Length: 173
Image 1 (spheres, helix red, strand yellow):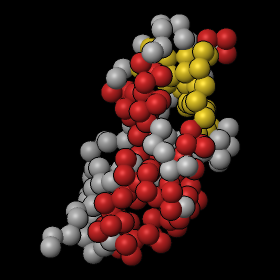
Image 2 (cartoon, rainbow, N blue to C red; image 1 turned 120 degrees about the horizontal axis):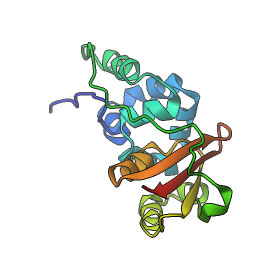
Image 3 (cartoon, rainbow, N blue to C red; image 1 turned 180 degrees about the vertical axis):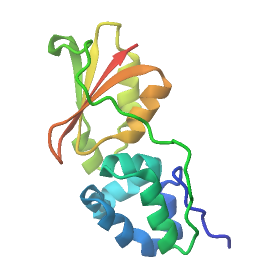
């Protein structure tokens, strides 16, 4: 059987399925990755999060993370990756005003219960009127969710309150 080629687009679930021995390498790369030891999060988040998104969550360089995992798996380094990392807006935007927040979804409990919040959040985003903002409360940077919202051309603001609490605000463009 051919082994998985590790790239920035490799889903964490597929990586750990093909190379279970890389779990310690991945977890030791960033403190946020310790959450992968939670079996519920492991079943949900890893299926939609790729290494490029995980690097953002962990505050890591995508190329360094991918090459670290490739080396541990016996694959050659990728000398230069395409710029696949999404740039998240972390500066408070002019469009943000507290009074425009019309809905808040705390996805921490959903994730803890093993539920996938993407559909509920995207549904709420799509219901926004032009001057409404949706607030998401997450336990980490929800990179796949932000990537999806960007593909749908919504504005966002990512506000990291702490290691355990990240706020993301979405607004119709």
